[in-house]
Image (cartoon, rainbow, N blue to C red; front, side, top):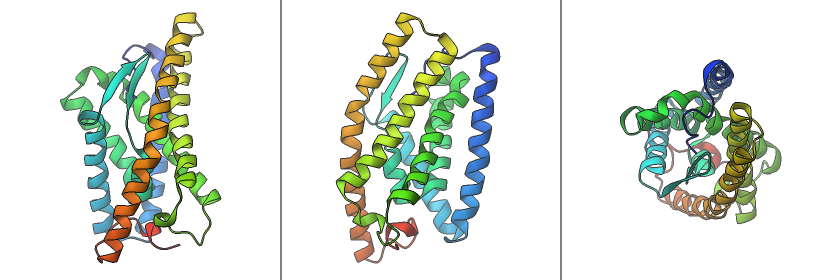
Length: 224
């Protein structure tokens, strides 16, 4: 998902600063909401798990450059379901920052572009979950179709943001459009794999509840 350096540059980076700042402000709001129903210890633990998970996604899991960006198994929906919106958002931002600072410094000029691309689709699935998941359904009881819808929204959002940045930064040239198309086509693999990872993570969460070990995870996992 790392958009190549130079795709957005110069004065156009001002928009990326704005979208990233807005995402940061909304994350603060989500964190305040989370702390109303979870302990600080739970929030910090879930955030730490999210940071580690994001770093593993970027540096350990398979990833490859396609067109204008890179394809990663970000597993944004998995993070959201298990850890909640705010810890996942912070984890995505910090995981991306750590990866850029210590392992891919050439990506740092695009940090605000990339963090916006990751966070706004996460906010979209948070809104979607509130609308389409019945209030009486705990996350551990979701079906493949449920998580597929969320994965489509998250990964589709990532692709849409990447396409937006490419068009915003480089225009409507044929080569740019072809790069966007190849990136979008490659992301079909992620869309197919992520719901399986989601269901596996939810099955593990269900086993933790049975063993009394899930109390520090996202409360919505178990309580409708």
